[in-house]
Amino acid sequence: MQYDLTDNITSNTPNGSAIFGVFSDKSTKELEKSLSSLDVAKIKETIKKSSFEGKINQSLCVYETSNKKLDKIYLIGLGEKNKYNEKKFLKSINSFSKICKTENIKNIYLGVSSFINDKFSIDWAIRNISIHINGIDYHYDKTKNKTKNKNNYKVSKLFFVFDSIKKNYKQDIKKYFSQGEAIANGIKLAKNLGDLPSNICTPTYLAKTATSLGKTNKNLNIKIHDEKEMKKMGMNCLLSVGNGSDEPSKLITINYSGGAKNEKPIVLVGKGITFDTGGISIKPSNGMDEMKYDMCGAASVIGTMKSISELNLKINVVAIVASAENMPSGSATNPGDVVTTMSGQTVEILNTDAEGRLVLCDALTYSLKFKPKHIIDVATLTGAVLVALGKVASGVLSNDEELTEKLKNSSNISHDYIWELPMWEEFQSELDSNFADIANIGKRYAGTITAACFLSRFTENYSWAHLDIAGTAWNEGANKGGTGRPVSLLTHFLLEHAKSL
Image (cartoon, rainbow, N blue to C red):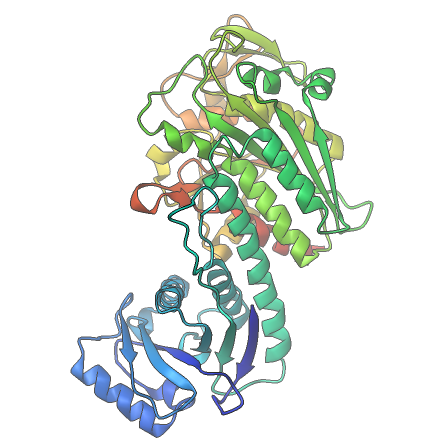
C-alpha cells in the first residue's frame, strides 16, 4: 500500500474521501485546520439535520464538498473528549476501516490530528492505523469456487492529514507504518493457516509454509524433522499423538538470526495439532469442525516469524512448531499408555484429548538446546481457560515474574490481552501417577493451571511462560474465523526486546 502525509488536500493529490474524528461536543475545530470554510459549514449543517451525536461507533457521511478532490467526507464518533483513550481510539479506527471497506474507498485522506491526543503517542497511533488498514483486505476464499469474491477490496493510497507537519513526521510515519504493516502481514498469515480445513492444512502443509517463509529472508533458516528423526531424538510423547493418523507428524524449526552470534535467542514454541478429534478419548461431534483451529498456536508463531523477518529486527529468535493430527484408529495411543518423553520423564496418558501438552513437552525439551534467554509456548490448550477468561484474554502462566511483566507490558501496548493465572506448588500434586513419573491430566478443577504445571516440568531451569489461547484464537458464530492472536502481542514483545539490547 502507498501512503503519504499532507497538511493540505490539493489539486496535486488523487480523488478520494476524507475521514475525520468528531467528539460528542460536535466541535469542528480540528476539521477547520484541514478543510475549507465551505466544507466545514456543510459538515455543521449535515450534523444539525442528522441524529449524529459523536458517540463511539457512530458515523456520518457528508455527500457534498467544495473540494473537487473529495468525493465524500466521513465523520467518525469519538465519544466524550475527557474519556477518550487508547481503547476508544482503536474502536474509532476499526469503524474507519469498516467504512473504507464497505464504501470501497481506494484513496483515503485520514485526518489524523482529529483522532489523536496527548493520552497516547503518535507512533503508537500510526502503528495501529497501519495494522488495521493493512489487515482489512484479509478474506478467506481458498476453498471457494462459485461464491469467491472477485472484487477484493484493497486501499490504493492512504494520506495522513495533519494540521501541521513537524520535521520528523515523515521519518517516524515510515518507521511505524512499516511496523504495523509487518504485524498485519503476520496476523493475516496466522488467520489463513487457522481458517484452512484440516485436509489442506496438515503438518506437512505447515512445514511447507515454513519452508516458503525461509526463502523470503536471508536471516531465516528452516529445519524440518520427520518422524524417523524425532524417534531417534526420543520424542515419543509427540509421536504418540500422531500414532492414529495417516498424516506424518512434523517438528518444524524456524531460526531467525538477526542479532549478535553470542546473543541468547527468544524461543517461541507453537502447538500445531492440525485436527483434534480427541483420539480414543473422542470429542462430541457438536462443534468438532472448529478443532481445525487447534493449530493456532503454531499459526501465531509462524505469523510472528513473518512479522519480525519483515521488520529485520536485530535479535535472535527461534520458533519451534510441534505438529501432529490426533485421530482414533487401531494404532492410536490408548488411555493408560505410558510413554517416555525426550527429557527421560515418563508420562501416563490418562486422556488422549489432553494431547497438546504431549507434543509441547518434547518441543520444550528440544528448545533447551538453543540455550534460550526466554521460552514462550503458545497453545490452544484447555477449554478451562474459556471458563476463566472467556474470549477476551489469553491466559499466561510462568516461572519467571520478570518475563510475565514484559508480556503484560506488551499486552498493554498491543491491546492483545493476557491475564496471569497462578501456578503454585500446591497444584503440582494433581499430576501424580501410580504408574509413571507424571500423569497428563489433573483432576476436575483448575484445568488451565494443571496443564501449565505439566509443561513446567520440562522447563524447570529456564525462564518460561505459557500462553493458553484456546479462548482467543478464533471467533465463533456468524463471524467464525481465525483472529491471528497473539501475533500482535508476540511481535510487540519482540520489538520491546530489541529496544532493550
